[in-house]
Image 1 (cartoon, rainbow, N blue to C red):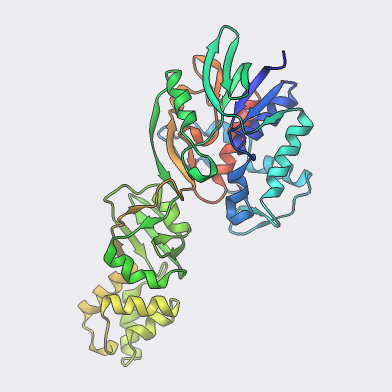
Image 2: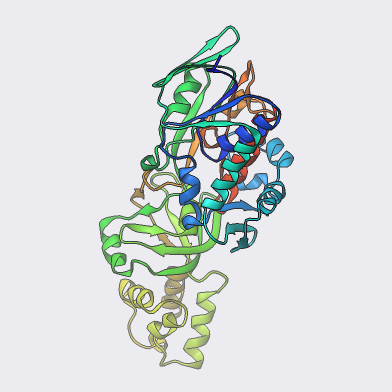
Length: 393
């Protein structure tokens, strides 16, 4: 029958498309359905439109999960090099921006077109603008009710992502399906997301919107040394996005504004060699001028260094090497790159991504409780989990 398939995949994103091509190359009759009008919308917007499609240095340590060992199997069996080989077979030009982080030289469209080409070559069908109104189990597999009719399949793969960036079409459908089949869904929250600030600090920093500097930010035993970006709403940039996945409401951030430098030793030496120097002159050598002036004003540093006592130097250095602040919150799913939490992986096979007691029901990608650091790791999980399910569905 026309509406009968071996595999139906819900979600035409990175994981779903990868899974579709993998399963179809095995000779399976595969249908991908998505409510969106275009496939791979998050692929297109990723990496500033250039798609940070993998990270060559990715390891299981780059992933957060309540079951941290779960991701190891899939990531070992489909590595960043495997995906890079695919990219190069399609002749996609790419470049390494930061250590291990590979981006398209031209556009994210190259990666999406590659995945769509693989689906076409393998014989997988993609059906968009398809609303799902119900999913149920049958004696021979699954029934999926849609606005275009009823579909049947032997295997069902849920790859419809998390809650991040609802303007891209994100919904909680994957979690609803998981709960319907008795699976535990761990609490979800926004990850890789900018911080908002309390009014006083926000007002002090807002004029600096667009200023970026290298920092080392600490929270809950984790730290990241990467750029921090001041925005008109708060703090963003790679360092802030990274640490946001470990931050909880009420936690303080400790930010080293001079990573790798001992401000106390430097200021003590400068006081001795150039006693007439001011803090502003010192700051101007290390920060963008607008940020230097703001730091100077916020801390009310005045006069020459020779006027500062040792205790003054110590307090000043602490403000630079251990600037402590409590964010008001985070911007939420609206701008979050990922969703933390999701389908509890203890109920899934780490080899196939199938539900332990339902071997033809699979959950892959962002919908499960595996979340990568910033820098291409989440795509690695999409590719690896997609291939794992595609080889079994």
